[in-house]
Figure 1 (cartoon, helix red, strand yellow):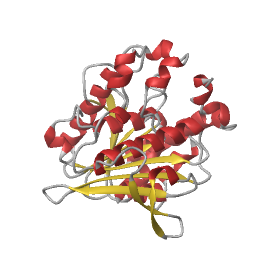
Figure 2: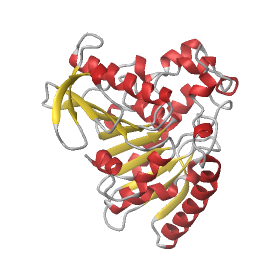
Figure 3: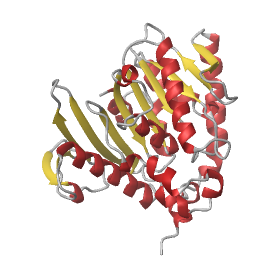
Length: 315
C-alpha cells in the first residue's frame, strides 16, 4: 500500500531543507531592497480584494520585452511571495518584467478559488505590462500555472492569446492522491474538486507551448506526476492511443531519436510533441528531468542567467 504522506514529503528527503527558508528570505529581502532603491520595484500591488491578493512587480533596466509571472509553491497552504524575489534576477537580466504574487492559502480558500486568484493576478499584471506573457510555477505553483493552460482556463481569451510559454516546475498535476493524505485536513479537497482541478484530467489550450520540468533526484511521485502530465497532453495533442505516443527525444548530448512515451528515462532527457493548428501555430508539450536536482535546488536556476531552465522559459 502506498504511503501518500511519504510520497509527497519533499522536505523530509532533502537534508538542507530546514535551512533553505531562512536563506531564501534573506536573499529575497536584499534583492527587493536593491531593486526598490533603483526605482525598479513596485511592492504589494493589489490585484484583488483579499488581504493576500498582493504582488511585487520588478522592472528590467530597459524597456520590458514582456511579462514573466512566477507562482510560488507550499502545497497551497504555506509561504508567500516574499521568499522568492531573488528568483526574478534571471528574467530581469533578459529584459523581462517580473510579477510574483501571493494568494490566499487553504483552508481560508479552496484550491478552485486559488486558481481564480492566480488568473486575476496574471490579468492585473498584464494590464500594466504589454507584450507576450511567460508563466512558471513551482510545486503547487506548477499546478496553478498549468491550470492557466487548460482549455477551461479562467484567463480571458485575450490574455490566453498573449501566453508564449508555460513551465511547470515540479508541479502537482493529479490532485486525487492528495485525498489520501493528512494535509487534506487543511486542503479540504473533495473528490469532485480534486478531479476538476487536476490538469492531468483536462485538455491543453490550443497553440500553447508547455514544458513540465522536474529534478531527476525528486521524490518518485513528483517524477510520476511529471511523466503522467506530459504523456496525457502529448497523447491528446497527437490523438494517439494511450501508451503509444511517438515523441522526439533529445538527450544531453544533442542526439535525437523517436521513442514511445513509456521509454522515457529520468536522466536529463527532453521529450516533445507538437501538432500543427489550422492557423499555422502549434501546441508543443515537453518534459524534462534535470539531473542531480531535488525539489528545492531545481528552482535556484531561475536566478541564473543562461541556465537550462531559464533558456527553456525563454525558448
